Image (cartoon, rainbow, N blue to C red; front, side, top):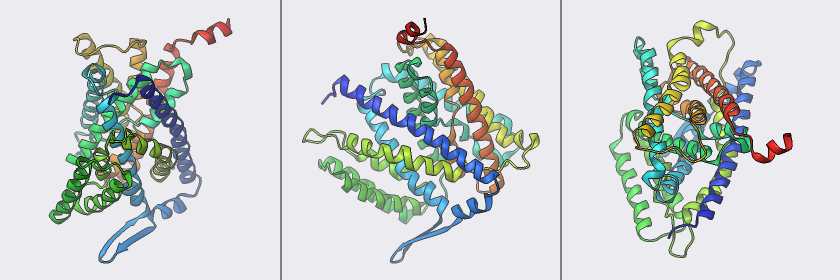
Length: 400
């Protein structure tokens, strides 16, 4: 059943509203972590996230520090939401036809490949850093939309939709990267259990089961098996989301209901908690030598230069070759400003950094690079879009 354009538009507006306001919460949480760590509370902050938390049922036990419960547990809910968004966009949204998806697909491919190449080029002489090649390939949708929201009505709706589509495809790429390149030693027994849980999920879908709690319950079982398997546990959230039916026989949409219900919790709780837990980097004693070391420099330059070159360059090439078209109401200067804005990689970049490196020293360097590159990309992207934005007619008349 095809959804009316008005309902799709309303859903998109609700999504953008929550994502943009959630972006401001994300910024505040990251800033608070930075202030605490650099104002003498670093010991308390680090002790909090190192607190061991054990959950056991019979002989099955999961024992992790609080930080990993956030990164492996809470972030699985974030990835569950990402999976819901991806499925909806592919089935009936901005990625449902090639005409709609072509430009963001080309832009996102460039926005992942070029930043990774920039990082590898800068870190080629330091092989211990090369595992971090995917860190600058990610875009933080909440942060980027939050910055774009500062422009208000000056930013064309088509520009916001394009940024959203690029970021969602970027998320798909990040999910594949995590699955293929950031997997530890595998447990065959746990993988078999995970495969059975996946089979149950899709059997429920094929049987027409529309009660979301049933899928969530099986999804939790899947999460435990995936956690024990060596594959990163957050991927269980994506798989569980893909099994949720878009449309039920009674005319309701379990997927959209779940997506709507989760948005507030993810935007205003889960992502801010993740930001607070992961953004605390000490800048005490950090000088030019530390900031310009290959690891943070490669991340920062990948996010800033790599993203704008990759996104804008691939989009320009696709449009010039006739493989995609420029969205209505968007010009080349705005497209370039948007390309700069995709260099805000905060959440997913820090997440991938945590998968790539174990040492505290390397993670500190990752945080410096991610925060520096994201801040620079955000400021430049906002500045360019502010300069190139067309003032709404009502505002222009009032000003005159």
